[in-house]
Amino acid sequence: MKRIFIFLLIPISIIMLICSCQKRELTKVRLSEVTHSIFYTPQYVAINKGFFEEEGLELELINGQGADKVMTAVLSGHADIGFSGPEACIYVYNEGRKDYARVFAQLTKRDGSFLLAHTPMPDFKWSDVTGKKIIGGRKGGVPEMTLEYVLKKNSIVPEIDVEIDTSIQFALMAGAFTSMQGDFVTLFEPIASTLEAEGKGYIVASMGKESGEIPYTAYYSSKSFIEGNPKIIQAFTNAIAKAQQWVAIHSSEEIAEAIKPSFPDSDLELLITVIDRYKEQDTWCTTPNMTEESFNLLQDIMTEANELESKVLFEEIFDNSFTK
Image (cartoon, rainbow, N blue to C red; front, side, top):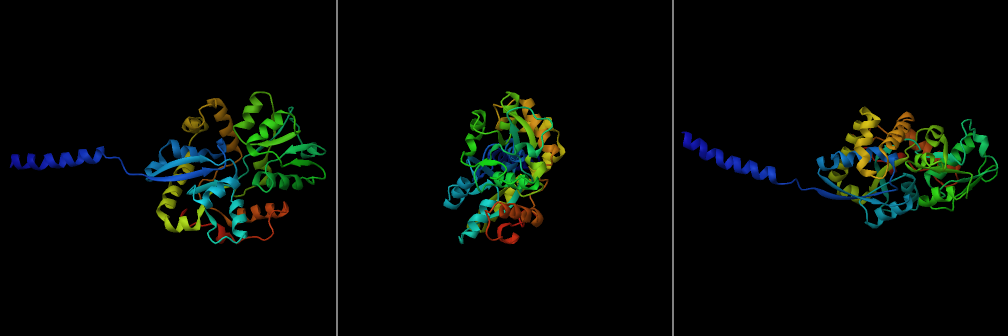
């Protein structure tokens, strides 16, 4: 009887050893992000904590350097998933494209940029920009449209009361500002806090606090990719949801440690400062689910900026089935 037991045990042990040595086969997914920023902290938590691997995905991260370029990569098949403002999806839908992009998960719910001046302005009022020049980003992009929306909210008429420079590429805005090409600039983190630490610019206002909740940055794919790869989309959404929940219950110090590999050139204390700032203004969604109310506000902002001729139904652009 003992011999039979040993005989059976040996093959079972061998099988278990082989299984433990074999790596789980991962599905490669190409993600094009609009830019590399601490603003997207939950995404880097998902990457560095291994949440994508847990869902069976191997992520290839590409810096698209602009929402228009990200959308082009998605529609041309050079990226499987795009990550930018969902306004890009609205533009493509209104062009009448059959295989348009649909949003399936949301990451941020507020503008993540900050208004910077050349000198400290502890008593800053929006009226202080009157007669000045703001470097505002690409015309038709959510950051620039949100800026216009906030200005109008504060009774300041763009291009009449204040000049907005939309000619400078996103990646060059900080350099243009430090070269004195504008009086103010809107910048994302960590660039905003880096300039402040270097004494080259000073944060005077939070665009996220001023604008309210909108689906600021979200994940999308072409209709055909979503329909053909629902398991990939579900796995991706699961990983993002895990990260959002992880961020919600951990301290800024723990989050900073988690994302440090994605920002090797940023000081840990700087990361903590930025995360504190984003947490304080309730930047990140706690689930990937999207709301029609915030989508309607986004379309109102686009309409006020004269960038949207006809509004789109929520269900045409957003697919909440994966977040449930």
